[in-house]
Amino acid sequence: MCTTLNNLKLNEKGIVKSISCDDKITRRLYDLGLLENTLICPIFASPFGDPRAYEFRGNIIAIRNDDANNIVIEVENNELKIKK
Image (cartoon, rainbow, N blue to C red):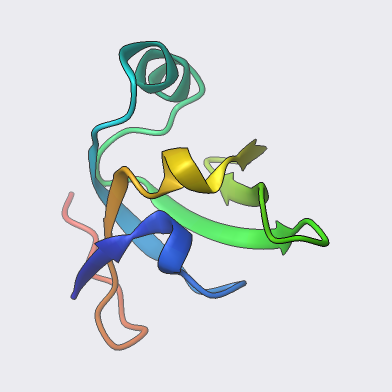
């Protein structure tokens, strides 16, 4: 099932399928290691829910909901299939 990153519940894992943010934001995410087929998990939400902290590849970064809405992820019944 595909959804956007901001729809993941805390501690629910997903695999990034595409990133269609603003070019500058996309470039920064790529530089931090957030690429297609990367496992990502929201681990903390601010008091008002925006931004949220996400963990991937040993990094923890905050992503605004507006940007997270442009990141498509795949989640399948809590069983993730990672292609190698």
